[in-house]
Image (cartoon, rainbow, N blue to C red; front, side, top):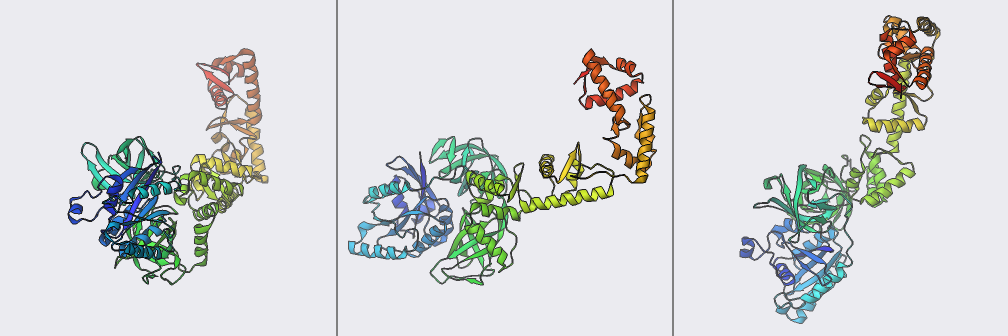
Length: 627
């Protein structure tokens, strides 16, 4: 069943709650104080089924100026709005402010509902309708139909329901492929169940037993049960109003404005870059360091404004602004917001979040402004390239990129594929980096290896783990292996067993070192298999001998274990002999091998254990067979 969420908006006492009761048969004024005062103070929620069987959830938001914060919380995540205007009063101050707010929150669909039509003459109704048409010019309701109703007599209610049903067909599907995200608008406790939060699921889907997090505190929790419009369900989808019973969290640990979302899908920020548009009436302006109230999702945060591309943003104008926040926010690029003056509390504008992880900007910096223009209007691949270009000290995952961009996984996949194919970004084990960063890593690796070879001219290379630890940007072993493999394919470096070197590096001996090399080779050749020699036996702790011997390992010398070495010629001879023997005899014991070599038991054990490590032989009980 397709679900849509409808919100009411309008001036105090223009009949929003009564209209909802006429549509649904339910009263959303549930608080005793609301009943007593006859006005909506908090958010009210209910639902009804449309003729097409779609289910419409309704958010009844308060119209009084003092409760505008609650109105903003209710306006988050709406598919459609009913702008309610009383026929006996017409457009009033809160009507205009609500209309501004809905426009800034990018509400796309709406109907203008003229209530209390049975209380005034037709001529007056026509005057009110003309005034409404004039006030909604240039807004998303400019071409909206005005439907006359009377909620008491039910006049026009069926026509309104049919119109809601018709418009609901035009509402796009919500993004179910992104990580789950719900802006919490109510928190309460139910006896026997525990903590319950409510809100509109604006992205993704949630299942019973899903493990999620409460942001910004990043408290882990688990879903115990889910209700959509009062009915228990196993899964809730983006676009549905939900009540969620969560575990391991007390009511006092959560508040309206917190976000329930997939684990590690959101990051906190103390600054955001935005594009702000100011209302085109009332002479509102925005200056440097103005203190504002920022409304995002269901949260209010105090902040300071830093206009980046002009001194003052005037009424009806737009501009790029960095908002320096007094509390952290969790948001995504593309999220909508509203701002009001700190005092007097008047709505002055709103807009779209462009960057949720910016650096502190200087004003009038052309590079910054150009980058913001790309982020605001560019193709998704341009936006992601700019994001990755800026993240030079870490490597975002696809989940990080989705969280930043606010786009679906499908769209992000397409954009990332284009960037990879055009050689603008590189993928390392689900970590993405801009090619500027990749080239910088390449230069750093070459410089590191050149310095190592200069210091250790005869060593074949640096140990892979040491190479990893010396790089400025730390990688895990798996990512390091992938990066080294890429560098190797590009002939930047090579890997010999566990040693990394410049691709064309060769150890070169000077005359003195050649003499030492010949001496070592002569000693090993003369010694044979009777008595195995250790590195200390040969070098006698002479650093020049140690350096040459280390360079000879793998070519002239075979290292049997940490201590013992033999000539490479002898090692290859022994290897050939054991292979031939086992091909003919299938197996050999240590004693039989000792007799074969006519050497000591200790020497034979050292050689056989080396063959085992090299996967030439395999030990089974007290025998060896071919691997």
